[in-house]
Length: 264
Image (cartoon, rainbow, N blue to C red; front, top):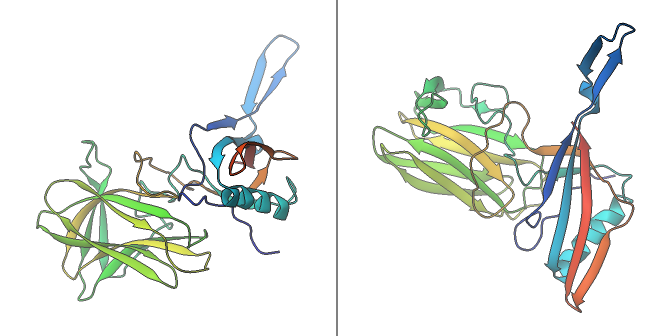
């Protein structure tokens, strides 16, 4: 069976707000005969739950949810769920990890001053004769609406390229200066691939300071949320309900509610 993905609405968003996200953790407790308590976390028992409420759905958007629920056989089949409250990119706080693909002629130095005044930024230098990229590839639908954002500054005013890539590509060429600016590339690609790449491309000899790369399944960026380790893409999510709760305000406006959950 082909991999299933939680559907994106026609608005370009995955969900409507407000939503409720809860993390469930279990602690194993042993009480000894003398009253001593020994407690330890159960690392394999963690779960995340998203309680989603939709209002004013069009018939087409309601059909997307219903079709996906049917394909999953309700709670039985797993699917990929993108956390709408998180940064999809893994290790957004550290460009030196294996989550990132760095061009062979690029050097990445940590410890630079970031927009918050801390030392979480990276100086990236292209020492080669051709353009080189810092990129990350995710196994998500490449045709969804995404917003890729990153903070960049450069001692030498110039331009930088942000791109969203699959078998088609969109590249935004944006100005950069000595002041920090949050640059964005937002939109949808015409493709059916389930591999999606975002990249920052440096010209030959170019040096920039980079901080806070973020990818979100929506039109515009939200507050930066750093990740250490995996980002907000969950490949083994399930519906946590046996039926979708649906009501109608009119023949063409529907409400729905459901719960999605995944193991941590």
